[in-house]
Image (spheres, helix red, strand yellow):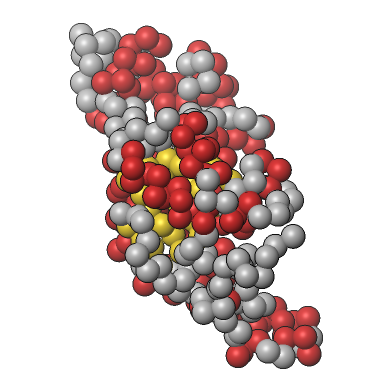
Length: 310
């Protein structure tokens, strides 16, 4: 049971305020409710736009951390934590990152992704224990996600990040006073359609910011060629088909040759492209990509002592 005396007071937070535009939502028709929610969702886009400079700084911080071999840890509880889990889970198939590179620390653990775990977000020690087990270094970065700005699970993680010397970011939808983070992104979406339901506008704005941060960092790391995800991992038939189409597009070859190249490259799309366009062997292609920092564009534009330059 929770103690009323020890309850964290949140009524002053913007995300907990009643929205005067939706007080009669339970008297509206289905289409009217949809229109109302759609109108309110515009505030999510506006909030992110107002914070674009901070989001850009966050993306650069994440990029520099990953460039140095560091890791990213998304820390959150409830909806905020689930957004971090989603972001971490999407990076390996989309950008070919190691699962250890981008991780999520969820209040309540894996079970809390599907079911609420009582009191998980109020623990100021659980996140620290989880991060301590990750053996953080100065190259890592901790990104706290807390719509209310003061979730104990998140704040304690940011404080711990400071003690070990790694960078930290807080993404919040309420004003965060004296937040223990190097950068605070404040997405002021205003009161929710349903009072306190931050799975709505707050979550939408937060997801947008997370998309921008990770995508920008991965592009800067050379994980794309133009707007093609050339580091994708074909973990499904859809992704395998996409990989084939990317090879066909870049190399101007048919499906059969694309499949042959992909197979010969051991399922590495970028290696397959380099083998074809630079007329190099598998080992030579891997070496060239390594010298190019994993960037396909740099590899294709650079010289190499192989067949084309001999």
